[in-house]
Length: 283
Image (cartoon, rainbow, N blue to C red; front, side):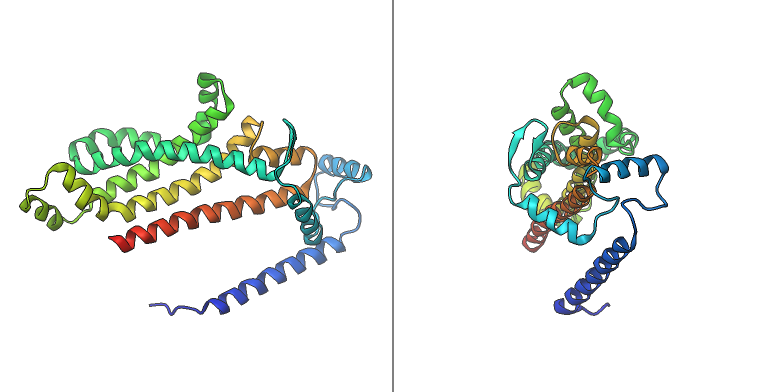
């Protein structure tokens, strides 16, 4: 069994690795002469050179430049000056709202259906071929069909989040329910507990950690997919913001958006991790 490491030791090493990485990045960029590196594609290099001549950014900004850009964005992250000019906080809020709605609808469908599949071998055998065919399909493959059918980019994005979120929750719920120890079910029968009481008092508490694990996997996939979906449909959201900054050749903003996407994804995972530990303790 691996020994636990004190937090201060791991934190110190993490900070040291980060400092070395940022320092090497800073020195490497400062060592590059001119706004464009020689290894870039000629057409792309010409675009970057033109942007630099007009006061734009270099091909890859230094960590120092990115830091000061973060400070600038943090001064007013929730401004709204028009449809295509909104703060990065507003864009993240749009993305989180879409993820929340799609994820919530998926949970309302997947958890009860997973319960039914886990408790019924017949239903499991009947639905398994459909699940195995649809589960590997990329969520973004549904986007053109959703846009054609729904004709609304926001609802289409929510639908794509629903599609990508439902499978981990459905399969984990079914597995957790089917894996409940038979001894516990036999105790319920001995006490003449009805189906509803057995499901809520015995099966649900036993399967809860597995169900929350599926939710945790789903939220990570949903946050990953929403960025790509918003790049496709445009309008609002952190994915759209990234693509818009690319069109403006604002490389520092793209790096900042990548960092924020990672931080928000980490927070979502940690939030469900707290719920997972809570249901594990209550088991």
